[in-house]
Image (cartoon, rainbow, N blue to C red):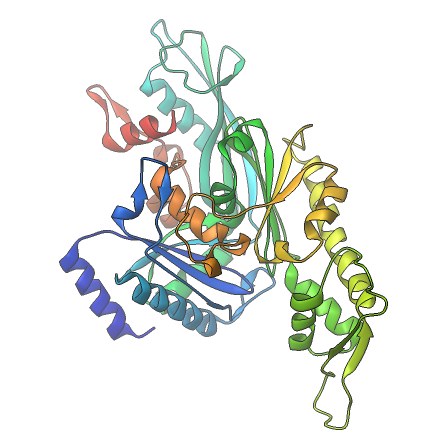
Length: 440
C-alpha cells in the first residue's frame, strides 16, 4: 500500500467525516478485509450489511506469528485496497481478528463490600477495578476484558445486580491475552501498511459472534475456528464467554503431511486436499486413483499416482489428533465441557469433507458448520465458514459485547485498576454509562 494512497484516503475520510468499521482477518492461509459503513448497522433485525469485502493469499505469516514483516504488510495493503474499492470508502485503521500470538484466557474473581443502599453503578465500577488490580500477565497483552458473571452474597448467575441488596458483590472477569512480542510485531506491521491498529480480537471469539445463535451462547457451545496455521476455540455459557483455547496446528499441517506422505509438492498436496481430500472413508476410494506432480524439478520424473484411500489415511489421523488435543485441553480447563454443550465449526479448514463427522466422533455431541448468519447480503464467495471471523468483528462493533476496558487503552498499555469505568458524585462519566448500559 502506498503512502500517497493512504494520505489521500485520510484526506477523503477527514472531508467526509463518515466513520466506517474495517475488519481485517489475519490468518496463515488468507487475509480478508470487510468494510461496514454506518448505514450498514440494521438494528431492526440485528444484522449488518458489508459494503466491501476482499481476501488475498496470506504471506509472511507462519507458525502462529509474523515471520516476514514486509510481505505481511504488503498482503494486508492489497486486501484493504480491494475492500476499499468495493466499498467506495477509504479506511485509515482496522480492527484485526487473528489467532496468532498464542491467545489464551485467564479468569480473576473480585469481591467488594456493600453498604446499606442497593447496588449501584459505583459498586460495579469498584468490583471491576478490584478485579483489574489482580491481573498479572507478564509478557502478555490483554485483548479482551469481559465479565463472566456477577453474584450478590454468593448467589451466582446474576445478570444485572443493580438495585439488589446484600453485604457483598462478586465479579468473575475473563481476560483474553496474546504474546506481547507478537502484538508489538503486529502493530509495527500495520504501520508499514500505513494503517492504524484500532483493536485486536481473538479469532474464535469473533467467529463465534457471527456463527452462534443466542440460544447456543446461553445453553452452552464451543465454537472451534479451524484455520490454516492454528485451531482455536471459544467456550460460551450463560450468554458469556467463558474460555479461549488455541493450538498452533491447522490446515497447513494437513497439507504438509500429504506432501511428505505422497512425495508431492506443497502446491500439489493442497490441490489434492481441496479437490479430493476427506477425513472419513468414502465409497470406491480404493479403486479411484489420483495424480499429483512430483516434488522437485526433474523433468523426467512422472506424476505421483496414488489411490484416493491413501489420501484419507494421511488426512484423518492429523485432523483427529488435533481435535482430540483440543478436546482434552478444553476438558482440563476451568469451564470444561458441560453435558449438552454443542460444537460449531468455523474457519477454512472446517470445510474439508468428513471433518464435521470426525468432530462428532471425537466430541461425542452434535456438531454443525457455522456461517456468518447475521450478514445476509454477503456474496457466496465470502459467506462460508472461512469468513465468520471477519464478519464477527463488524457484528461486535455494532452490537457488542462491549469490553470492560476500552480498545484504546488495551492497545496502549497494560491493565490496571485505573482502567475500570469511573464514577463520581454527580453520576458516572459517559464511558462508564455507555459500558454499563450496553452490557447489563
